[in-house]
Length: 346
Image 1: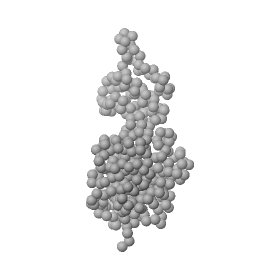
Image 2 (image 1 turned 45 degrees about the vertical axis):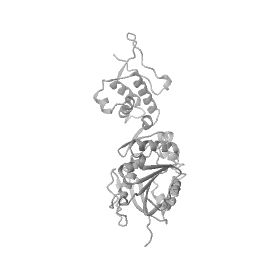
Image 3 (image 1 turned 60 degrees about the horizontal axis):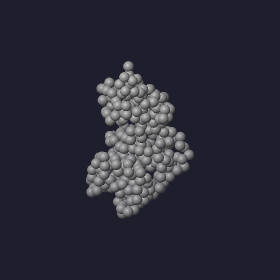
Image 4 (image 1 turned 60 degrees about the vertical axis):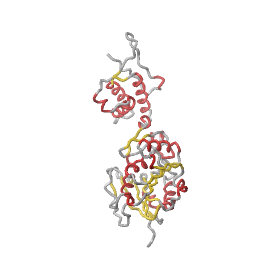
C-alpha cells in the first residue's frame, strides 16, 4: 500500500520528510492526487476549517499546473515527487498564515485574473462597486443604479449629467493609487475608447500593474506614472481636463489596526492600508487636488472605509462638490462614494 508521506506542516521546512525510496526498486514512492488532497485538507483544517478542501485544491492545481476539474475527475492520477514537495511547502505557507493569493501569485477581480505580490494590496470584491460606478458614469446618461455586483445603491438620477462621457472624444479617466492595476485595467478592458492614466507612489506596485496590463492586452492604453496622488499629472497639462477620477485610497486609521485582519496587517503593504490617525488624511488631500484637475461637472469615485461616510461628508461640506451616490456593500456598509464637481454657474 502506498505511503502517504505524511509530514507535520506546522513544523519548519527543514523538518519536512522527503519521500522515501522503495528498497526493491530504489525509486521514489508515488502519491495520487486524491491522497495529496486528503493530506492537504487535513493539515489546513485548523488554519482554515471552512475552506480547507477548496484551498487544498487551489494549491495543488497551482503547483501541478492543472485545472481543478482534472483534480476532481482524475483523482487517481499520480503526481511527481517534486510536485508533492512543492505542494507540501505551499500548504505549510498557508498554515503559517500567508495569503493564498501570495502563494499562487494570482487574484480574480471583475472577471479577470491579476498577478499579485506583497508589493500590492490584494484586490477585494467590494472594490468592484467602484468600477461599476465609473462604467455607469462613462456610459450614456441614466440613473446610477443597477450595478453589476449585487449590493445596495442610492437612487441618483441626475438630470444635469452630461449625455455620457463616452459620447465625447477621448475622455480621460485617472486611477489614483493603482496598486495591481485592477481598477485601471478593468476599465480599459470595458471602455476601449477612454484614455486612462494610473498613478502610484510605489514603483514595485507599478511594475506589477504594467505586467497585468500587458497580460490583458491594454498596456498601450494605460499610462502608468509614479508619484503621490495627483502630483504626477502636472506634466500632462490636464488641469480641469479630467472626466473621472477613481481612487481606492488607504483608509485604515493608524490607531485602529484591529479593523483589518492580522493576515492583512502582516502581509500586505502598510502604505496601501493606513490613512493617518483617523483614516481620512488621503481624502482631505484628494478633495482639494481633484478640484484642480476635474472638468466642471466631472466626477470622483472613491472607496470608503467602515463608518467613514460622515467624516468624508464633513470634509467636502462647503466645497465645490455634490454627493451624487453612496453605494452599500452586501453587509449594508457604505462602500463607494460618488462626488461631482459643481459645474460653472450660468
